[in-house]
Image (cartoon, rainbow, N blue to C red; front, side):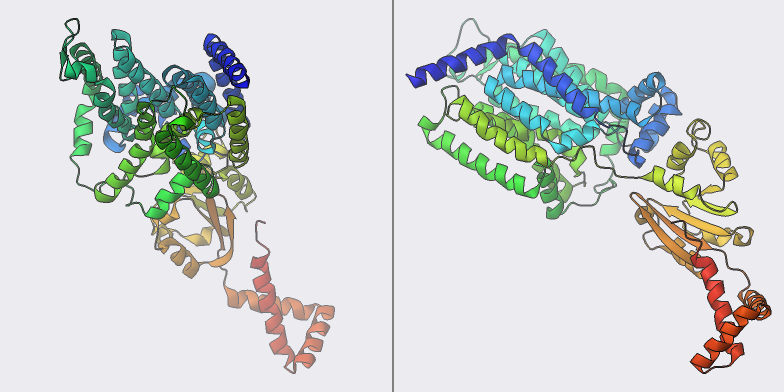
Length: 566
């Protein structure tokens, strides 16, 4: 009797979710949007985000495209979107990051619909909960880069792909081609998503009945419907037409020698850290891995442990678009061109989420029990989220600190765009990258430097203090050549470490001998001070003149010790 009542209850809930699925999806979108915008502007922009703003704001569309052809690996679609977006909403941190927040929020709502339509209503609930508790998805929902939009269009692409597999028609086919082209133009490496679809299409479209016996009403070839094959070719034709403008640049990149990408070959340590981050922590990774393995073993080998709606194909799909693509990227990075970076494989998190949600949904347990267990897991997963978003750079704090510097100071920076943005967004930053902006910065005592030997060409006698600020020293000057030159020429005062920026403070030396001599005379002329010198000389058993010199040198050194900014 209890089993019948549970089935009725579950059916009512399933019926309710089905009827209200679009309203629920909207609620999911709105809820994630609130999360995505929570303190979204509290953290400073870091240099990748600054790259987006600087290129998008100070170039027209032609300039953005030209830069992508000459200097960028990725096509320019994201920067074109940012160009128009910031033109409407300004150049603040919130304006830039709002694109990602909206995109990831839309992804969450559409992902719910995707899971509900092609898997089941329980998968939709569990997958949505995991989506909400993912620290990585939240992090990139608050970053002003392309990855939020990549997540959105990967969800849309996979939705169109599954629609095409389930019921091929012109609409789903055309949308698949368009969405895949958008992914390509957003981020080249996200095109790995196409590989998953290419591998899955023979598996999902193959009809065993058509292979063994002919249907006079259906044209087929070796178990494949010719109509479906035709539609799939049409989808790639649409992609091909949209791809044409970028074909020369793409094949030029493909023709470069192996290993020419900026990344190094990944280590196993980097792979492990990537997997740990996808699950919010090392401990949670093993919790999910072990529980997933147990559940998967149970539903495959113990038939009574799984629900009737279980389908082997629905396990393989998320495993291919998730773990398979991530490991494919990793092995390509080891044996060919290094392209492995966590944010480059972020879109595979959808497959990881879907794999676990589906396996959990098909376990033959009362839904209320499953939901209770799942909420416990989600609770501990959500506790590992960093809200508000973790800051990469506190560059604004560094700029504010350097405003306290002496008027006759020489301040260098290897991130002039960041400095211009946080020093004077309305005036200096309005100028594009180049001599005009540099001139405005130099008028304020800030000198853009990237040459490691710049310190050899500067007459430091014009200044009192030197502030050598660096954010990318490991990249531009791994051997610390500039620091070595400065330490030889100047008096080191202090290192100020702020997140994302290091400031080395030096003072320009004066003629020490003449200064010490002047200090000796000043001390000698001060009767009270000179009495103390005589007393100290007796205690140390040295002559008063020697003690006088020691005191003067101490005063000289203290002059520079008190020049610290903080």
